[in-house]
Image (cartoon, rainbow, N blue to C red):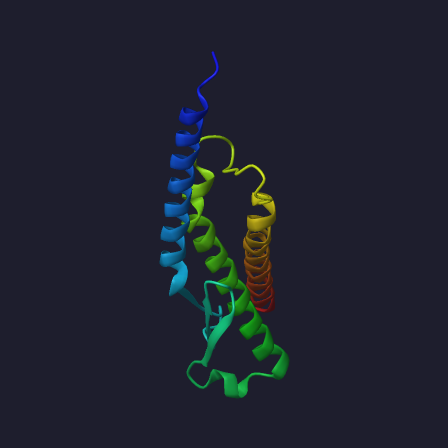
Length: 151
């Protein structure tokens, strides 16, 4: 049996309202959200907003004064990339209710919204942050190993 159009329309309107409320809640949650990360060597602290834009860079202690330009630049970049990855995770988490609506992903016919296009860049940022963290861990292990070989 086919469902009467009024019932289908009412159900679609209810789903649309649920989606709108979930978007409003996520936007409110992220409006003032920031993430702050320190570099591994604890010389730099970086804050990014919910758009992933750099908001503040702080140089901690006086260590930055003795660092070479390449080392200081690497510390800033490391902290910034990690902060952006952490923020991307936070944004994905805030919008998770949208992806958990009935069906595979929310879809409004004719809207032109492709959720993979919307969230794909965030997933890339999270992956890049994880890769950068792994590379930093590998460099640290290499340094520890080299120090152990000298002794």
